[in-house]
Length: 262
Image (cartoon, rainbow, N blue to C red; front, side, top):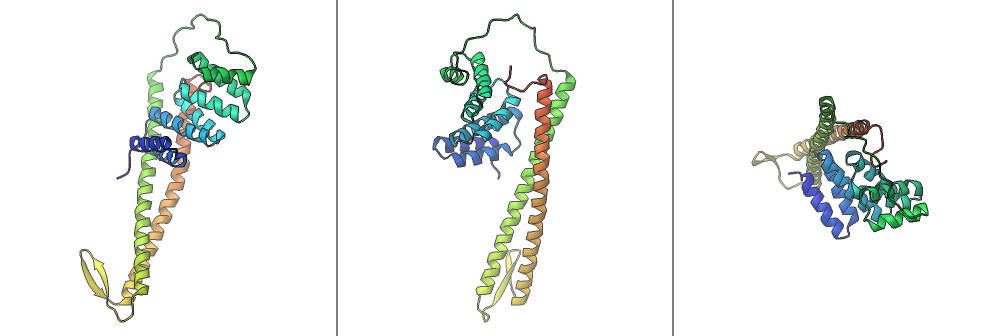
């Protein structure tokens, strides 16, 4: 039975705590490929970004943080991690903006304050108070319907991808079994009897019959794998398009602003 995103996330957290960053990234990535809600996806992306930071893969960390912030624009952890990644990557202007946003949300974070000063050359000061612009625009029923439609597409593609992966794994196991039996048949002396399993019983068969059956089974498995791989390639593109559509919708509802920016 395939693991749920919660189980995969927990395994990723355990691997991170143990210092196995590659394993943590693998588990977080697997979690993102399951049927996972947008808010939970943001959390897992933020966790994976921290692993990339530890590995000095700053572009990857920036990408994950940005995807997280599209769903959760006030996520202080994602903002701070992206600021660090920007700074380490030499993008001081972008880092300064993110450090500034972090401090506006939580002025007590000392690392953000020192980061802001490193990148901007000046100490951070809280902005002057402004008159309230009034409440943010409330989402309409049409907005909610659009969100549900796009999020449903993301989940549907994730479900189809999971099914295709399970079929590919089954075909791969069948292929390995047939390859092993073919090897055993080749190593079996000619004078020995050969049997083929049919259901729960074994029936004596001539060597040519078993060899032909195994050859046919291998060919069938390879065809199944080819279909699965083609399907997974197609679904990978569909997944990217669905994610992009979701991020674009959230951006449009945010007034066209990049999440996490003032």
